[in-house]
Amino acid sequence: MENILQTLEDRKMMHPLVITLGCREEVQQVFVAVEGQALPVSLGIVAAVDRLLKLHFIVNMEFAAECRHILHFLQRSVLHLSDELPLSRGATDLSLYIRSKKHKC
Image 1 (spheres, rainbow, N blue to C red):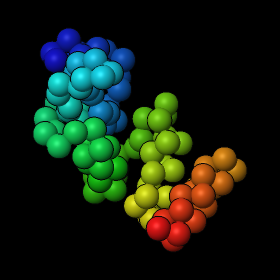
Image 2 (image 1 turned 90 degrees about the vertical axis):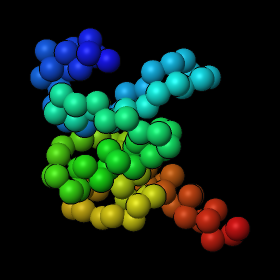
Image 3 (image 1 turned 60 degrees about the vertical axis):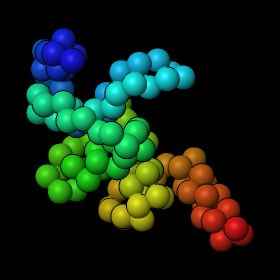
């Protein structure tokens, strides 16, 4: 974990990130890395993404540029937290599809 945190620091990546250890079929550990610290998350990747989004709102931290669109989609479509940024056309379509499926169940 020290090597991962050092690499993030060297690349000047100070925004929160989810880090998983293990392989795709068997994730062994999940962390939220923020400002040089690796905070363990025992409830899995979904809980880690939830904490990542909460850090964005509580501490006013920016999303990583590489995943900004995905996190913005989750913020708007899953958490129902709006802001002034528009969703892309594809994300809007997916959001409408998800909402229509929830109402049919």
